[in-house]
Length: 140
Image 1 (tube, one colour):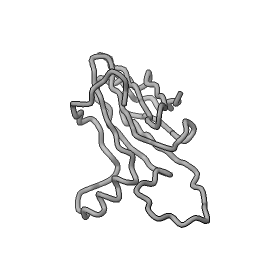
Image 2 (tube, one colour):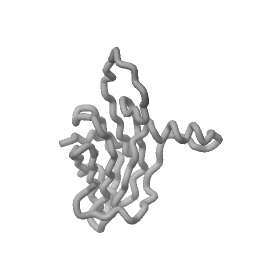
Image 3 (cartoon, rainbow, N blue to C red):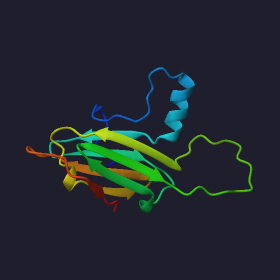
């Protein structure tokens, strides 16, 4: 968890590419196992997006934004094994999450860290923002 921030408030600023409408409950369950869960925290200075991504490395992430849309994806080379897998409850080898940024999010100044299996993206807030440029955010 992000140090010093309690996760007691749900911030409705994110949208997932998965369309849950007209899908069975089984599909929603499978989608939740293939897309990493997200916590979004807001304070007066910035937004913090925290994504649980165990087993990945910094180089496995791609974070880009354009026209106020933040796209976060992860891709890990799958390893082949001769072993029989008894149970597979999550598979984060390839996924994408997309978020519509609020009007006061200054995405060009965003930065990301990968710490203890969590991808933490900090997006500063500003009064005058125009997130039209395309940019890539490097993960430290």
